[in-house]
Length: 254
Image (cartoon, rainbow, N blue to C red; front, side, top):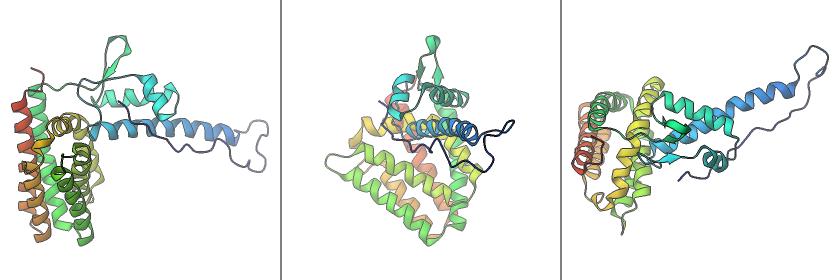
């Protein structure tokens, strides 16, 4: 189910500049219209990317383009544009009959993705630890506390845990100050997010005292010691333990 979002769309008109509307000139309204179309397409892409990364869309889930357009309050055109972009990134699949769904990873694809994540995200954790500030550590600690609270709630709150887990990881990676690296990791999470977070949602009891709680605590301790190698190891253990559990649950396509 797609979350309802109220996009803040720029106004359609602005005060006309002196001389606007003269023969042969492009009107201000025409310029704003073209910019707004591009902005809407990017905004819809961003909303769908966020849903995928946060695990709000499950593997195999089919999307109605009309439903997406209605939920976001836009026309079909920017939705089709967003789907085309995400399909190019293999984050969505366009099926016969123009149906769209979240891909279902095979075991081989998931293992390949995990190996890449271990290298790229492990590197990000290590580089971030070398330059991280006390203020940024405080941000990571806040997300770690939010994850712990969601995991230990009675009953556990998997939706809150999913959000806190994503925020913890990306707040750490952003501390490295490498925008291209963040873009690369975001593309990995477009594919990994649905299956990783579906795992948390389907087995919430595993959250309390689970591997993620332990790994997050170890990661935070390494950041406070400014220990890049230990931070990388904690991150690797976090990803590896989750991947091993997902493989055992047999939720992947053969």
